[in-house]
Amino acid sequence: MNILKLIGREEEIFEKDILTYENELSAIVSSSSFLVIGGAGSIGQSVVKEIFKRNPCKLHVVDISENNMVELVRDLRSSYGYIAGDFQTFALDIGSIEYDAFIKADGKYDYVLNLSALKHVRSEKDPFTLMRMIDVNVFNTEKTLQQSIENGTKKYFCVSTDKAANPVNMMGASKRIMEMYLMRKSQQIKISTARFANVAFSDGSLLHGFNQRILKKQPIVAPNDIKRYFVTPKESGELCLMSCLFGENRDIFFPKLSENLHLISFADIAVKYLAEIGYEPHLCESEQEARNSVEDLIAQKKWPCLFTSSDTTGEKDFEEFFTDNEVLDMERFENLGVIKNEVNFDQNRLENFTAKIAQMKVDKTWSKDEVVTLFHNMIPNFGHKETGKYLDSKM
Image (cartoon, rainbow, N blue to C red; front, side):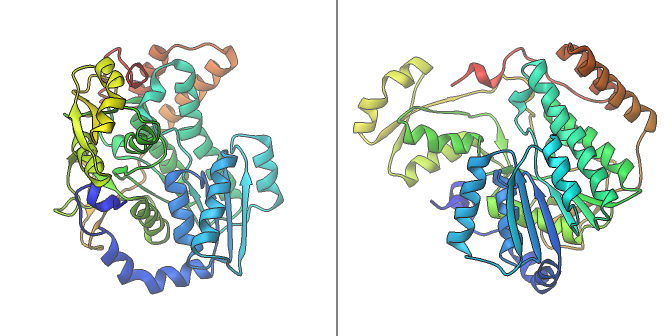
């Protein structure tokens, strides 16, 4: 299936930049060692492929998902075969003692790329998953950063999100707070990061859900009032690698907006997707109608679709990669923009946030409202949108 066609594009957006820097990219990768954390997720796998195919000296991949790791290795072997360097995968939770022992046993990497994240807006629906999101997105980043400093790592890269620019949900805000912790550590190690659009058909995404609904002969449901920017999995890997290898300290890379990267609604993609596999969308008025009409419609080469307006918590009305007060370099690359940052963080706020979260864990009790208040203390203009409705209450 042609992902570019489904998201309304004809060409890859970073192709010119990759071609321009390919010799330098290959030279750096082939003479360097890499640790990719969260390397079996959708973005992680794409990053691992970009590194692997350029023959690194050492490439270690860590991820909590044993099954995804198996698929990653099968995919690499089937696509690229083998490399002369040290390639190994480890099914580990980076918050665990086992991971700490793994780092203690070696831990020597030129580049550490952290792709692990709780990325779903729906993760803020309850206070317990919300706390895990803070742990993964903020404190595991802080922990692996410190380990990288102690082991003499040249550069630490991690993924942020477009939702960190003027955040309206807890996921985006957690990544914005993560960026603040990165700023503090950037005095001790070179760091860079990336904000980018939705990765088309990444695991757990709505578009990946289209695949599952087709396989299971279930209705396709999508919002018709939300438009998003999309990059392909390959483009997400290229963006991360370019930021990691070519980003200066505290740089945030993002895709330039152009006619090649344009907004498209989930409903429009659903229509293109169905046409690609030979079906016509049939618009339903309710979930029940959509569920009940599956068999009859499929027999007519039609597919039940429910396209509705969005009313769930944390959905941003529009996407942005940078804010008005951020300094940009739009000249260095063809289709990559760079946010240039000076050291800027509030030590007291960071210490207060760390202490308050730690106390909540000791007490083993906290509410979502308490956490939201903490987030507001960290991000005074945090525009959290609480509607009382969450994606788990929908098909």
